Length: 264
Image 1 (cartoon, rainbow, N blue to C red):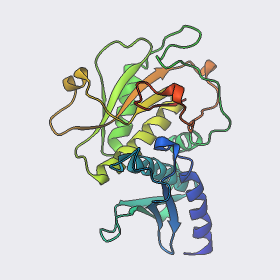
Image 2: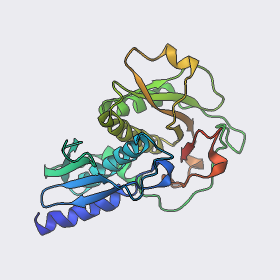
Image 3: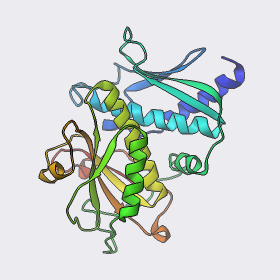
Image 4: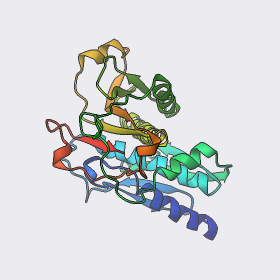
């Protein structure tokens, strides 16, 4: 790998490590090879008691891949990603190759800026989605359609659930299968939705331990596999401080031990 490309790869690795993680643990690591940037599962950090199937690990890895791709775009490169590239090495979750020049778009700049967490901000909403000043704000249908479009770009679907939750909207992120590759796709879609929401002044809570919800049956089709539950709250730009994307999970943010994690 040429020196200039290697220097860029190191910047991409740093960007990838800034992605949100399930259980607040980076159970994966990057490896820069002469041709590729590989993402490996890290058995030393993996917590089988918390994540017996490894689904959370794959979701977190998918989120890191999005950060890597966005960082590559800022440097003028197109990152081509292969999921589970080597059946003989199942611990290699993905591999990325810098494949030529790319003109960064304004939207990519906005999403990349949303990954940077300059400093922690005060919570704007309580867990039930009601602002501390008592103002409820549900994201508009236009915003939700935009977030659904972002999820679709990663090969997933974001289904808005029916119902009138005070001050918020709930949705479920689904894939068409439940394999390791689909978990990685779901992680990439989740991260893009979180970043796109931040760019639209939407705070998001997500729950990766999906539970059965009666209202979900109204929007899901046969073959849809729920991967992540999300709750969105809209804020006024005047009230929003710089985003905090990587907030460590605290016990007080869990509801019934279902591990909601908030992204502001």
